[in-house]
View 1 (cartoon, rainbow, N blue to C red):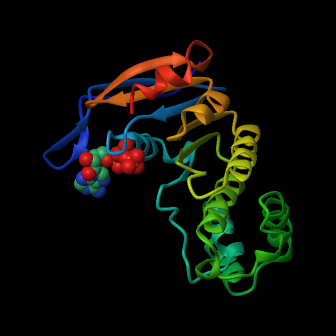
View 2 (cartoon, protein in one colour):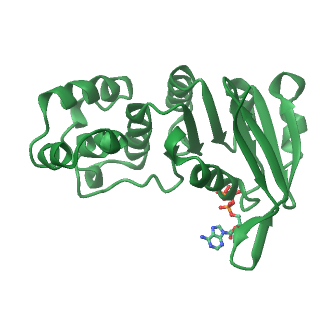
Length: 216
Ligand SMILES: Nc1ncnc2c1ncn2[C@@H]1O[C@H](COP(=O)(O)OP(=O)(O)OP(=O)(O)O)[C@@H](O)[C@H]1O
C-alpha cells in the first residue's frame, strides 16, 4: 500500500534543477535507502518529501536541527511540541515535568546518553549530538522516518546499533546513506540517484555492494 506519493517535474533551488522528474511511491512497511554521490540530490529529495508530508514524518536532517543552548531533554522533547498546549510547553521549558523526563530518559539510555539528560547540547560531541537528533525522532513517534545520513558521525558498531533501533521503531523509513554495505543490511528497497535521475529502484535482495558502488 502506498503511504506517500511523490510526484514532481523538477526539484531544485531557484533556477538550478537538481533532479527530476520524480515519481516515487513510498509503501507502508518498507525501509527505503537513498544512495548516490555527494551532491546528487539525496537531501533535496528527502527535504521535498518532508515538506509535502510534515504531519506524517519525523525528520533527522543532515544538520541535525538541534538548539545547542538547550539541554538534551529539551531537544528531545521538541519532537512532541505540537502534541501539548503552549502553556505545557512553556512550563516544561522552565521546569521539565517529571512525567516527560520519565518518557525521555529510557530513550537516552538506549542511545548511550543516560547521563546527559540535562547537559547542554553545545557541550556534547558530534556523535552524541547525532544521537540526540535520533532520540528526538524516536520521541516524536511519527508513522514515517526521514533520516539524512543519521549515523555519519558514529563508529561502526554504534552506527549499527542506531540503525537497528531506527529500524525497530519505524516500520516505514526513507534514509540516505553513503555506506553501501549498511544500505544492503538495513534497506529493503534501494534507490540510487545519478545525473539528476532516480536511475535504480530495486529490492536490496537483488543487489550487491559492487553493483551499488557503480553509483559512486
Ligand atoms: N539550499 C540550497 N541552495 C542552493 N543549492 C543547494 C542547496 N542545497 C543543496 N544545493 C545544491 O543542490 C545539489 C544537491 O544537493 P544535496 O544536498 O541534495 O545533495 P546530496 O546528494 O544530499 O549530497 P551529500 O551526500 O553531500 O549530502 C548540490 O549541487 C548542492 O550544491
